[in-house]
Image (cartoon, rainbow over all chains, first blue to last red; front, top):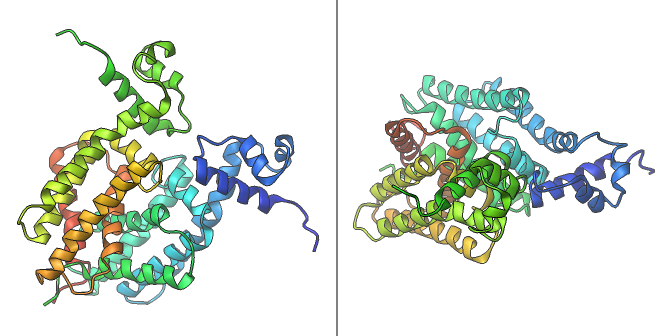
Length: 191
Length: 191
């Protein structure tokens, strides 16, 4: 089937280059070389390196937020919401690597713009909401440090971009469940 | 008292610039401007931008590893070792910010060299060792996913560089203890 444009290739090349060299250390020349285009041709697709950055990071970021919103609105117990959100987060790292690597490295918690900071805050609010719900349900311990717990889970998940390399999807899900178990049950023996 | 050299100022300026613009997006000109020197004068101190990077990140990285080694060799219960290691990690983020911000952003888990990768691995081994000890002591749950638990704690701690800004040292310690509590006790209610 003929491809109407090489947009997907351009974004994939940008994700690879930004992921390997960092956004600040990459040039449009690097991206053009990766996709096998002249630099001038890139301007048919984007008008700046920043445009490419946002093209790389928007799909995983938007999908994560959409799924977190959906999950928050279900009637599942808070512990199950947390397990599913963790799975979703890990699945997105798995499927969108290296896009999500660029997202984690360059965007999350780095105050690049009001819009992106608001996405960070909303994700955190949804997560803290699940923790508050779990406390109310008597499932979670009373008086949890919700903000720090939510930030710690986000940190543990995003940190996967430093040590996880996509292979078997079942392995990704096993890791997600191990992270959930650590956060739900803690390290201390329960007897 | 006269200062024999401006080495500390140069390294502090590099930490600030690399932390704000990323290592790849920074130039030696930026560092020279920050410290109020001509770029040429910087070459009295270092021979490349990489030299400056390692000058910035070595003090916090070395201190963290030294303290983790010391702590591992004590006879404290594993849960107390974990609490103290978490406090130390957070104290170093607090005291060496933005040096440690550069360390987390540019070095940890990024395979920049065999030497730095070995430092990552040793820290993780020490942490996993504490988890294994805790299991043996019956303090920690049997069959813990030690590797994932250790990586999650490291991730939660290093992620602080994205949301924590140094203020009151007592607040830093309170955050450290909240992180420890989340990892030791988990979110689920224990009754």
